[in-house]
Amino acid sequence: MKVLIINGPNLNFLDKREQDHYGEMSLPEMERLIRNEFPEIEFAFYQSNIEGEIITRIQEADKLFNGIIINPGGYAHTSVAILDALALCKIPKVEVHLSNLSKREDFRQRSLTARNCNGYVSGLKEISYLAGIYSLIQIIKSH
Image 1 (cartoon, rainbow, N blue to C red):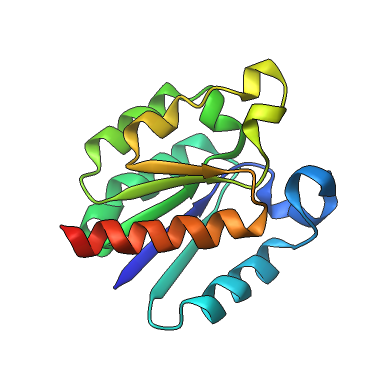
Image 2: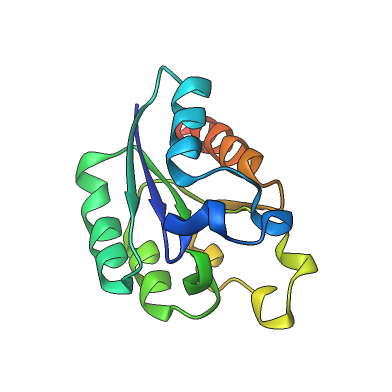
């Protein structure tokens, strides 16, 4: 099984952001945690601060992967273009957020992009990724 994990803007500075929202792990530490928790899965990790690059990765994913985990960061609340790319992508997708969106500012409480995913996980810091991956695996197996 091959899974693409897409991380959006500012996640490359994860360990420098508000730890009460995002936890203490850096993005490379998060990647190691994921690989250690799911050694049977082949992961490809991608991070970009550029909306168009994220869209291109989503558009190419059908041919290369069984599923996508996406943390679109701030684009979750603003990007109709990523929403549309997710709609075109026919493999299973789970959106994850480290912070608890329901406890955040009003504009962060609504995710545009999650509606074109099979589900989403929010608020568990690094455990959000693990729960999202577990869920994605189950969705893939059920298809």
